[in-house]
Image (cartoon, helix red, strand yellow):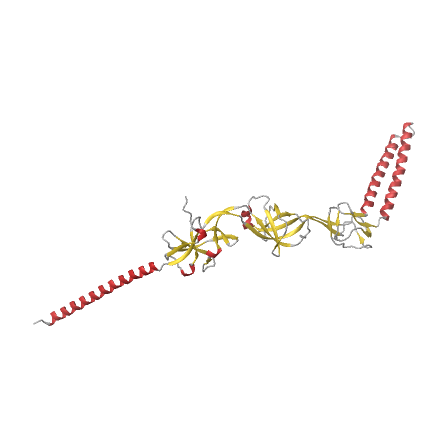
Length: 369
């Protein structure tokens, strides 16, 4: 007869054997499912279109705001007091340097000139007479020297009077287009007054002053005679200019530096004070480019691409770009030459996933060495 103690041991052994059998069965089944799942995943790898990015020579641009300024500008002011008797130019017309613009009442200055000229004539006669008297010792040498000094002084007064008379006519100091007149005929003007009579501006050639952030100054470097194009409300100006000048000090308030480009403006379409956008045509550089279509935004807002390694495993990779070049980005950081990037299908992939790659036809790697 089996005692109770032996029965209990038998029951425990039986249950243990059953539990072991069930666990073994579940383990074998789980492994089979895992293997089946892996095989299914391998047979259903996500297919993506990829490209090989390349380093190439690209023409970079720098787009900046700018303002047009005159090549030369002159503010015309009177150099004599008087009433404006006549305006001798038409507003908005082209005037040549030395051309008369205004005639100020010259009656006082004419009288001063005639008086000075009369004193000169008298001093000249006295000098001639004293010269003859000195030869016969009728006067002292001192009297003759005084007469000569009076004559020289009279000559100087005539020159001064002639200059003041000439100042009664106001001339154009430079060639260019004259603006509106701020004084009319009959107005009283004062020599060297604060308010200008008119302004003359030379418009051909013409300058365009460009504001460049100091952080972008390294892009320009020591490049000389950089071609520059202008856009006014999106329309490109007919002539290209050349960068001629870079300020040697940065503006502390705006953290920027001023550049100046020179343009042909024979059509007079560019006027001083106009706001324009310019494009600096920088020298070609060797850079990696990637289609904008192959990029997307990471949760932090930065640009990223999906790269594919030799085992066809995809990885999210952040990149930095310097600017757009048509439909591509010029990559400054994050991608190297010959890396493989997902072009289409990245919406359904995740980091570390194995994919099936299909190269875009235009991006098939060359088999040649």
